[in-house]
Image 1: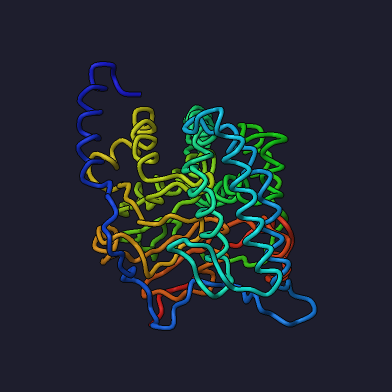
Image 2: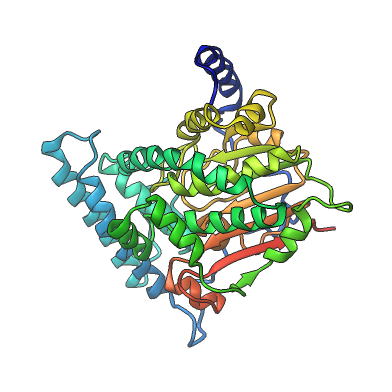
Amino acid sequence: PLPCGCFHHFNLFLSACLALSMTVVACVLTPLPAIATTSYEPATFDFSACENNLPKRADWISVFRLSIPTFVAHALTDGSVAPEARQVAAARFQGDFEEYLGRLEQGSDAATSSDHAETVVNTFSLCAAREDCLRRAGFHDIFKQVKQEENRRALSLLPALLTELDVKAPASRWELILRGVFAGNIFDLGAAASAALFENQGASASAFAQTRDKLLPRPWVIDDMDRILQRVVPSATSKPYHKAVLFVDNAGSDVVLGMLPLARELARLGTKVILAANEVPSINDITAAELGPLVMEAGKHDAAIREALQDGRLRVMSSGNDLPVIDLRKISPALASASQDADLIVLEGMGRSIESNLYASFKCDSWKLGMIKHPEVATCLGGRLYDCVCKYDTALG
């Protein structure tokens, strides 16, 4: 921990750093420079698949319908909406979104009035329609309270986790860090299965440790863990990455106990690390505005994080995104500029890595890391519910 007299100066320094690093989204978003092909499309699964063994469009619509009770429950606790108005507003959200899904089931591709509206039914259009229905009902961040609670809880667990990691040999430490990424990613309130799991046991220390220790046995459905370890574990032939851009997912244990230790370890090897988070709230995904202070707080209690922040090896930036999936053709100009010389892209979470960018090709190395929390995704990939995707692609060309 920092000596007491240093806290004030440290906070002033980090506030100045974050003021430079945190980005307000410009009106015009721009492509990630690392995208390797003009055929890039952020859609992994074909909702119009005709094969008998694959989920049909109705199955994917059902995935989103199953999420409605969780969203309604959290909408009813949203302190930004007057108590007397919440019930009506929550009912409006539910009615609008169910009506939208019903029209899709009847074969109509007509979308809502959202700026996100698309004629193609896919993960993006369904996520965007759900967010549009929430915002038109007056809800803008229904998971804010649970994000704050889980961030505080995860921060209290971080020092012990980092101590556990630091006594391990490099290879064992890296494997435990990656397993922690998957363990943290299970707590996703946008998926019915993991939302039920969260309601039953929360994201406590014991829950995180048990999940990490009891991940489904390897090999996972996509398992490049050994290749990643070979690339990053220090050796006579390995060379640290120059700059890594990490697109993070959920608040709480996901980002604090999963992705922050990963960023810390990369930074300790000398890699410049950008943690890229959403600009606009969506589900329980962390935003850049929330992540900045969170990393600052972690830096007060960990020398490696503190030093990485102080010398600029670790930064928080807005991705410009407003959904739990991401179209890398539309990121904030500041992040696009800062990532020009990145030689590693890390996409984490089921939405960003699996559902929208699993087969995306980049001009630099990429890791796609996430846990499968929808049975339909498991079926499409030939895996199991709660299976892990650990995909490592080297630079194209």
